[in-house]
Length: 163
Image 1 (cartoon, one colour):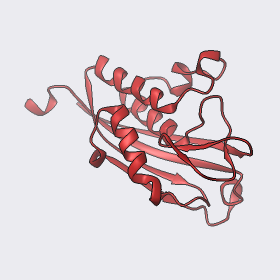
Image 2 (tube, helix red, strand yellow; image 1 turned 120 degrees about the vertical axis):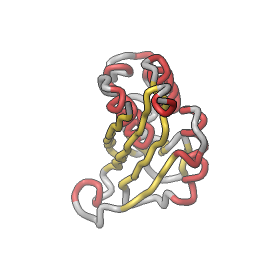
Image 3 (tube, helix red, strand yellow; image 1 turned 135 degrees about the vertical axis):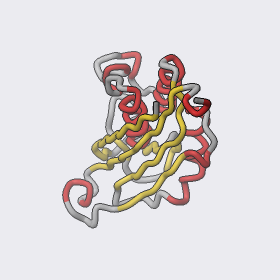
Image 4 (cartoon, rainbow, N blue to C red; image 1 turned 60 degrees about the vertical axis):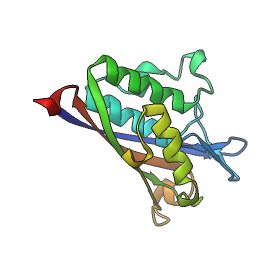
């Protein structure tokens, strides 16, 4: 069985918060507001994986009301998604993602993001796609009030390719 999932996440920008994307601290005057580290890229990837597995979303496993999740690294969330993949007898094949933000530039940080995400998911960096775009100054994203990310995940059932 081959399955795909789609993930989407959005967080408000806020002063006095670090900007973490793909587990990378990116120097920027504002960061993302959230209960965890608010890493929209990792959150979108997590939901894509969970969706491919037919499981509940990230909030089910890491509810914002749970004090133990406060400030958690989203790379740990991705590790949990990898464990769920394994426990459901699926193998993660690849991730593709897009970050939507007016600033900062993402490309200079994408190799490190891929490395962090790949390590958390037990993949190679070549199995992770990270792209970025702006919202052409339209809407809340275009006004730099927040950032969003979209992701897809492809999983295959263990043994499927041997059939």
